[in-house]
Amino acid sequence: MKALIISADGFEDSELLVPYYRFLEEGIEIDIASIKSDPIIGKHGYRVMTTRTLAQIDSSLYDILILPGGKAPALLRNNEKILALVHQFFKDGKTVAAICHGPQILVSAGVLSGRRATCYKNVAEELKEAGCSYTDEQVVVDDNLITSRVPADLPAFIREIMKRCRKPTGLDKKKLALIHIVKRDLHLSDQEYRDILQQVTGVRSAKDLDEKAFNHLLRYFARSKRYQINPYGLTFRQKYFIKHLLADLHWDETHFHNFLNKYYQKKGINDLTKGEASKVIESLKNIIKHTDRNSQPEA
Image 1 (cartoon, helix red, strand yellow):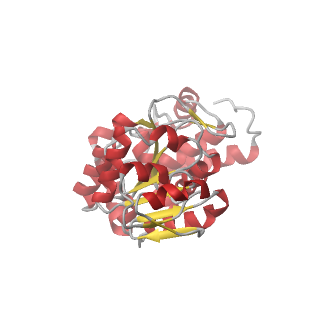
Image 2: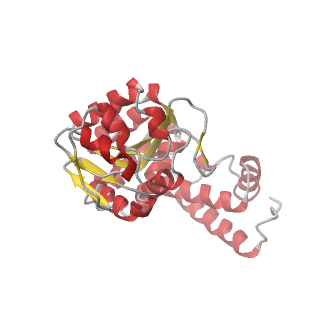
Image 3: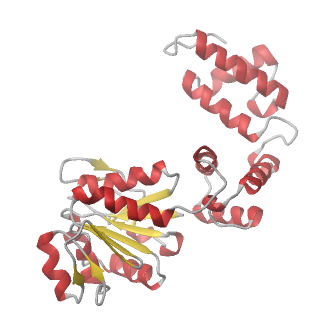
């Protein structure tokens, strides 16, 4: 599952930020796209970094589109790239969720004829003229289309969106988060990440993994020469646990290498055996427990 938010300067702050952080809580990948790569600024002053420009967006990589309101939709509604993306999402039957003034983009895209929707009250006449059945409710769900009126409707809006995002899975959030950390740290492109999942587990999304497939995926990374992990050494989970402990200690790579060389006669993390990695983890835990985190103990 991967989500896309499209907006621009003047967006209604909560209507972008609430869905964005809710997706992150669920471990769902999300991109924020706009016309340019510069940060976009909300009506109330929030600066949000974009992760993609519209020119970089491939709709086939996303499962859900979010269109926040505010003043941004008026700036975006005549952009040909956005209108083409909206058309493709509807053609593919993918979820499109728009709130407040967000449905203005749908009006310009010509996708509301015969549909049911809601919006900010000042936009209602536009929806009706576009052939849409307007309903003044917190949230209106019509097949793949989810719409709401104002920021106060966000709880209902998000609830309906999350229904589309949750799939049965044998994995807890920590394991899903670990997979996304691996993807980020190994600098995998979206396509490369999906190809690896498909090749190793037979699925295209981490949300579809069960426990067996998850462990198989970790073994694949651990054995791959590309990622320079000793297949007979520490486990993939141990490596990432150590990295999180180092972050808590504020140790840089040089400091950690000095520590390993002094106490374990090792040059780097990939030289550790499983047993040594376990000892290192316990040592780091004890240092965190007994040392002021604002100072770095000498290695």
